[in-house]
Image 1 (cartoon, rainbow, N blue to C red):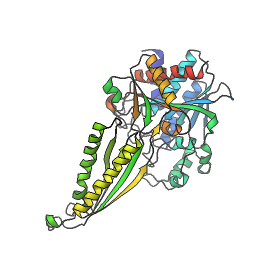
Image 2: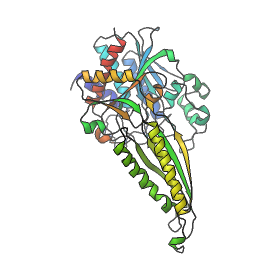
Image 3: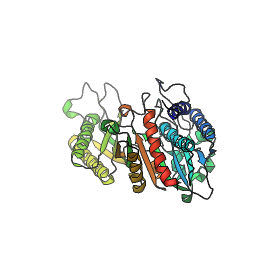
Image 4: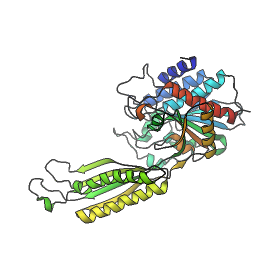
Length: 415
């Protein structure tokens, strides 16, 4: 085991505020909590060790800057340190570790970039606490919806605004977190794949070309409640039984579409609410949530229209009332072609088996890519498991990602 490998393992533990990565209940560093703040302090400690200048912006993001000239633009790298409830220690954290690893390697090799480098630790990437994601990176690009955010509460009734104030963020100033376009040149993020494409292919590095943002539907069904023991079967308006075929339809249609489409699509009936939810009462109201994703925006929107049409058929046949509402309809984010090609070249030049691929999950890079050229590097995670205590990535794979980024940056920020 080389010295750099040992350093990476040590810093991974420090960023996770732990002495072992074997934590049966996982990590719960939720947005704007003391646990997230403590992890940010570890970020600052490592930055100071690497002789970087640190500061916190007005939304709570941590910055670590290797400034070679105030006149030069910044090539930024980064990710996040917050987690879901009982999450793993690599989602986000591996990206922060890798960014520091890039600077550690460059300094050890005596390489001095011609452009400024920065590591950004974005605050509140996960939506686990307040049902809003990528808060820190949205603020950096000037895309926060402050009015909507002011309404958000966690499960304990704590408002996001109050949590941010307790974290040390001044609510009235968060609009000032936006970074001018001319300050940053490009952005890179390393992340665990959170899937099995790399693992199944025996590949070591994935370079992402697009991020599949979702269409999300809410399907509300209204039938008629009655006694389960006394109501004849042919006289019922059972909302749950009526809509049940939709669940199979979504899965089977998505499988069918993937047989003929060059671009993957995934669709999931992922939430259900049932009223009155009593053993002896026929279900009167059902609400389903459907998540549809593809980097092909027309494909996912066409699929959503098919779902709506299927619901209309059910409504006619079952004599129930069905309302389909679009909750989210976001364009997918395509990453910069030049950055993508150069990262592919860097990884393959280093001798790693490399795939060009898409991401089915959102990351901070999808916001940064709306304002600056951006790239996303995937490394494998064991069995594709993420948001789980057993989430795991090999340090050797983190190191491969680092060496890919170093090769890329030496070309982009060197002579």
